[in-house]
Image (cartoon, rainbow, N blue to C red; front, side, top):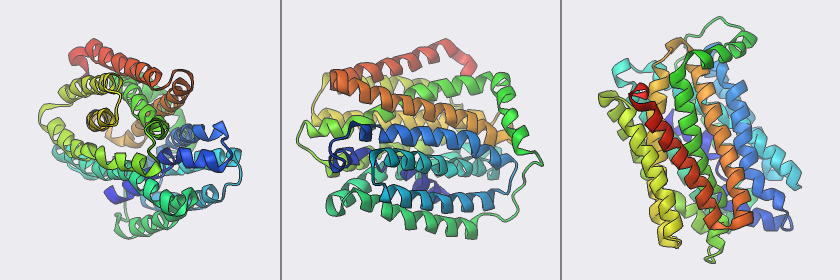
Length: 372
């Protein structure tokens, strides 16, 4: 399940280190800079419209089907002949990459309550490997064979995960006899009735916006140092500290509750953006991205731990609301960082993303002990 999450979520980030190559391939068209935004918005749509099916349908069959459709969308992206079609294909890839978020709550459902944090952390470590090493893989493959080869490579990976999930997932997973329309209509009451869910979503949206903002402009920032897509991809290896943060945060949440991790994580994200702004060198980027990734992923696992404990029968829909908010924040963060880069350069990106991190930290202060 961890491997399948990693393969699915990797598709959201392949394009980030490739933006320079893709922009040049389409004659410098500025639309290409919004490919990460299209992918994140597509993912948010997939989370909202597909993930509720986890509570009402055969999850094993659904996961296999979505991986197959994802492979078809990747073929379309690899063949995209124009910027507009590339953005459309990127959005479709984002929609069906939401299959990863059917797997995470399934892991929580299969685990006993006292081991839920550890189970979530284990699956999330696989997801984070895909998130981080996707950039490394994309950068190296693109330099050797071109940016389209990256998406051609992703096609058999998705099909392999469809086959693997068909073989290893339990065949009889319980689900509720609820119609799709009713499941969607229940999202509103869930949101209004669960203040912990609202606080967790707002916190994660702010922090994830700073995370996607960094990666959305990293390729452009590195070009200022005369470094290319392969180096941008290698930053995924540098940021691999987040992989260790996931299981560590899960175990800490099992033992002490998530509150401490949430506050420390928000503070570390703010510190990383201060570091980016005050140390504007490649070394500063390296140190800052380790801090940023570790902090964001620690907060993510801790937030998931607390929302999955709210209503066991509605974990898919809780995850829908939480992840839709998180990736909507991510899409806005990508767009805001791209706009700030065009208007004010790197310092503008640091101000925008640092401000979002400060907002998250202030929210944690306002929550106090209620969110723990």
